Length: 110
Length: 109
Image (cartoon, rainbow over all chains, first blue to last red; front, side, top):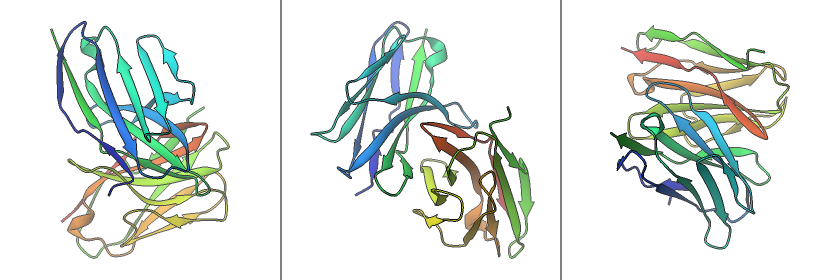
């Protein structure tokens, strides 16, 4: 089983839609969680960290469920510019090893 | 403040040639990472360094070596390149927030 798993998509949504991605991780001792965005052939860029209490940044909301070992990303009022691949990442406690999921591709259409 | 820099941006090698990918960060981060990204495979961890003087294997370390020269620099070496190492290589530096270099596009013929 992979350490971090994501549905590869693609998720095709119209502008203005709300879309959610989940990411599961296998190590219950994981300590830090992130969502990255990657545009085609570019380097990943940090979208937001994920905190235990959940956190929001504009149209983006990230949540952590330690009991079920998953993190989620909710995008409200999707824009065309949100089209990208969204990668979740997990740091495993004690090793500082940062592992990524394979990414979920989002396509927002007019 | 340059963040994370990587050189070269592009490279073509013949099978059996060697090369070193350079990575440097100016954010005083302890942890640095090397990943490769292939179509449909996501980012796979090759090696990482949790602090200056330490390195550890990731998911796909075979065929690679690394060197954490100092806190700023973390290099990745291919001793004898193989076509299977054709990929995009990313270096990252992480401390609370993570930053990636622009990537090196490597083709091994």
